[in-house]
Image (cartoon, rainbow, N blue to C red):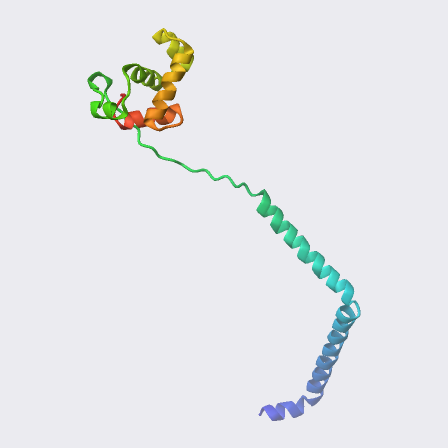
Length: 157
């Protein structure tokens, strides 16, 4: 049946095949003209597109902010000040003097060195010396670290 159909429409099939061959020949010639005859321009254009895409990618990579927001959760020690008693074991272990403990408590209240010296009626250099000794004994570098450690060890309320 298909063979009879082919013989009946022989002209149409041959005409279609000839058009397909001509179309293939035209596309091959177009490819030959564009790619082979203008090979230098095509390669330069391809390299330009490649470097443009590389530049866009690199610019996006370099301008992306490197800072991430990190949420740090720390325990907050809340205690009732009226019934607080300092941990004597830790006080003796750290070998803190009574005055250093007073300075530490005033630091925890948020007072500056100047304010602490005014409240205790001593010079600013004395407070700095007590603070330095306190930091050395507690093995910390900052006031906030000293306060945090003292609260954790139950030295101050």
